[in-house]
Length: 125
Image 1 (cartoon, rainbow, N blue to C red):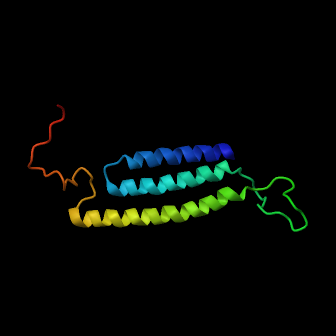
Image 2: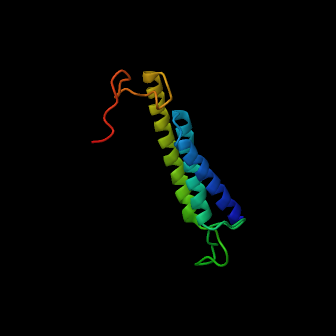
Image 3: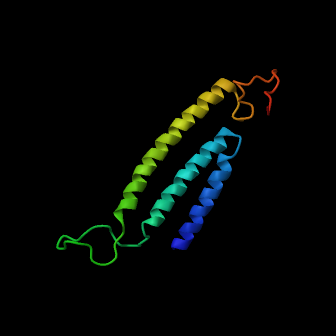
């Protein structure tokens, strides 16, 4: 089971990096969302995958006896989901404002600071 999760995390990271290197803002946003999911799966897989074992201590015991799920990665993932959703919403608003102002989602065409009519700056000394 953990080998499949490791493979899935690797695929998610690969797809996320590919999308982040794109020149279109929409693809970059999708890459950020997939990267957040990849990190969440990585944290989840790092916390030992146990099926059907709750992360709680029975009422008549002082410590966990036997196998149990680790509650810390689950809490970290819940926090990371909230943070990644708010970060994605913020980036989505920024991308929408940039599209409204520049009428393009291509980063090569977003040349507000570098007008097209002027010559390129020198590339060396």
